[in-house]
Length: 507
Picture 1: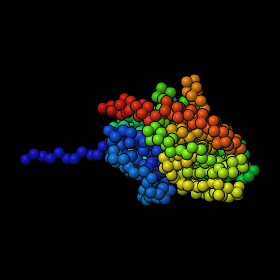
Picture 2: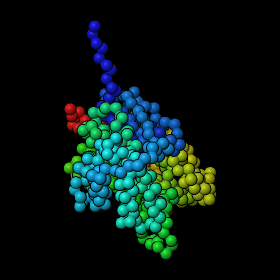
Picture 3: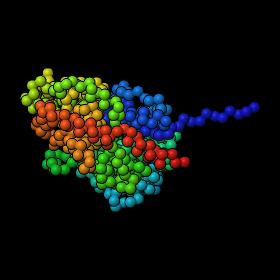
Picture 4: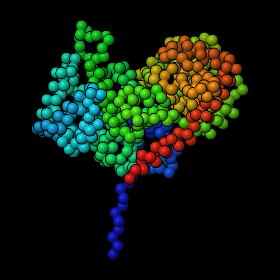
C-alpha cells in the first residue's frame, strides 16, 4: 500500500512584517503595502501585523488580497498571564552578554561586536537561557537592573525605573515567540525598524533567510517626536532638580530603547531601502551600513488617477484639502489656523480634513475646537476617510502641514490627478514640489514649499495658487509631468522585483 505523503506546512515567498499599519490603519504606508502586495500577484505573502492594544484598532480598512496566504495579528501590550513565579538564578554568561549588548546600545561605534552579540542572544529568548521568566524573576536580572539604575538613572524613583524596564522589554519575548511560530518564508520584508524590525532581526537569525528593510519615515525620529510629547512618561524630580534643557530620564530611556532596536534591525538587514537621499543619509548616521542602503521612491498607478483630470470643473474649486491622519505629527492645527488666512481673502473657500480621527481622539477634538474658536466651524469639514478618486476632482489645492514626512503618496496622487500642492519643507517634499535633478527641476514647480508651523505662509501660498489661474495651471502641469516621469508604480515594482530576485530567492 502506497504511503501518503504528509501535507506540507504552509509557506510564503515573502513575510511582510508590519507595525501599526495595514490592514487596520488607512492611508500612507498602509496604501503602499496594499499596492505592493497587489503589484506582485505571482508571489505569496505572509502578513504579520503588530499593534499595541487590541482596542486601539477597529475593523480592517483593507481586504486582504488573494495572494496573502497567511495573516496573523499580535498586540504586544495585551494583558497575558506571566510565567509562574519561581526562584531563578539566571545564567551568568548570558547576562554578561546582555550587559555587553547594553554597552553597545549606549556607544555603538565603540563596540563593533553588537551584531554578533545579538545573533548570540536571539536564540536564547525563545526557550533558551534568557526566557521571559529569567528576565522577570531571576536574581541575576534583579542585580543587572539595580546596577543600571545606580549607574545611570537621574530619576529618584527606583520603583518607576524598575517598572519602566519591565514594560519596555517584555514585548521582546512576545516577538521571539512570534518568530518561533511563524510559517516558513523565503525572505522577510519589514516596513520599519521598531518592533517589526526587531521581529525581522529575530527571524533572520533564527532561519538564516534574508531580511529586507524599507523605511518610509525614519522610525526612531518619529518615535522620538511621539515620546517627547507623551504624557504617560513620569518625571519624579522636584522642580529644583529639573533642567528645562534636559529631557526627563525615562523619556531618554524609551528613546534609547528604540534607537537600540533600530540598530539591531540595521545590523541584521541585508538590504536597507529609503525613499529619498536625505533619509538614506539619516539611516547611515544612525548606524546603517552604507553599502547595504539604496533609494527607491514611491510610485503610483498613473492610470488610476489620470482620468480624474477630465472630471475636474472648468473653474478651480476653492477647496483646500489636508489628506492624512488627524495626529500631531501632521500638525493639523496649523492647517486650521492657515484656513483663517485663506477664508479672510477668499470667503468662498473651504478646508477639508480627510483622514481618520481615531488614532488620537483628544487631538482631533482640539482641532475641532480650534476651528470653532476661529469662527471656521462652517468652513472646515472633518470628513474622515474618503476614497481619493472621489475627492481629488473636487479639490483645488492639497495642503500638507506635517512636521515630519518621508515621501508622501498623497502629493503624488494629487499631482497625477492634476492637483498642485502647498507643503512644509520636510522629507522629500522639496524635490516633489521643485524637482531633484536639473532635468526634473526644468519641469517647473508643482506648488509651493513653506516652513514648519507657519500658518500664515501656508495660507497665503494657498491663496496665491487658488487666486491665480495661470500659476495654478503651470503648477498642475508640472506635477503631472513630474509624477509621470519619475514616480510610476512600474518603476517602483521593477526595483523591488530586482531586490526580491537577488535576495529573496537564495536557496
